[in-house]
Length: 315
Image (cartoon, rainbow, N blue to C red; front, top):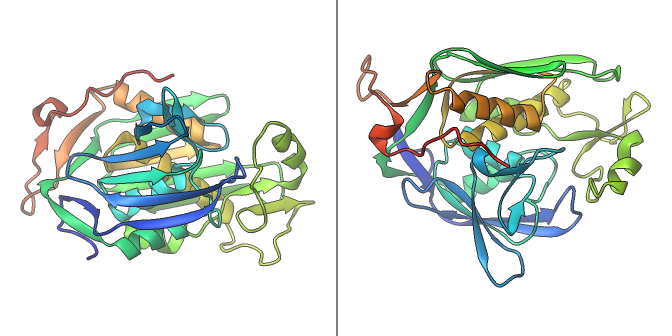
């Protein structure tokens, strides 16, 4: 039960559970992924101790924080560090799933998306009897924050072009670009781990961040060298992880993107702001379904499919 019919919505073929520690909270957490019906999308279900189960759509309109991770929430509940799981769902083509979380944060596992890819593989992917919608970029849209920028441009597939620049000589300036499909994501992106600087640890701890970080779930940089005994998984693992984060954050748009996303010195805040800026400009995109036959491009506006009115601001 893998893959799915081209152009049709998908869900998981069975449930899958993964458990680990939250990189920021330092608390143990489990995530159980359940199949879901066509049109339900991706949503987190969180029991936070008040006797109620809160449903939190995996949607940019529900983003509640973007400092060092992406969190989504509703009044009374939130779940942090959703980006690696969202990247796996997006890149592997899972459209609908209910994600039960028993802690405040999705476990970081080894700092990459590998564990989530493996969980999806265990569950399998099955097709549903409903067409998949894609968000097709029609014209360039750009957003700038300080010296950082991000932009969407028309492209025939989902593509990311990510460039980073750090004063640290070990990282320096790196660039990664690829059309994202399941094979490319597995091979080139999924195993790239989050990273941080040893010099920043005490400040992060004082702010209640990185309480669960360790050599087991992050690349740690100190004195211009990687401290982890095993070294790097890719020579440019740092920029590949930023690309992984971008894929996960862009998934909060709620549909696969047909377009190129380019960022320079970006992060979670920039990614989310770029999504908000894009969907607010309804002349910059349209909904499409996969062509039924070669050369036939069937486009429909959001209203024709009863799509939500994107563009609302978030807290």
